[in-house]
Length: 91
Image (tube, rainbow, N blue to C red; front, side, top):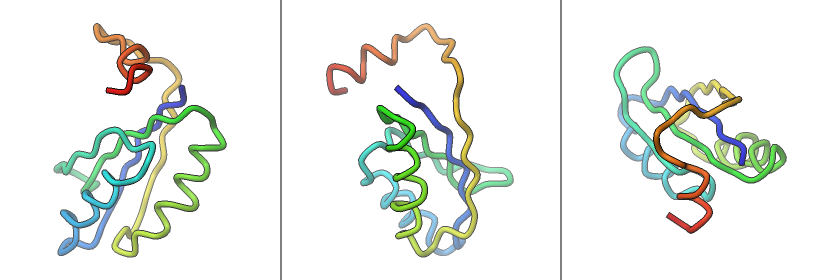
């Protein structure tokens, strides 16, 4: 599984709309509105790098109110929760 953290800036009047549109995209597992330099953080979990590339380059571009993104690829997960097992059963 490929996990990526997407840092997103959006039109201030459209943050909630952008968050909902992101949540509706296959491969986006979580969406957070946040304080700080970015408006939204989305977590993408997909099977392959090609799926991630498609999500970032073809799906995010459809959301017109996104003004800037930064994509961070996760190398390793350190957690008490077995995320791989959770997502393999469809949670």
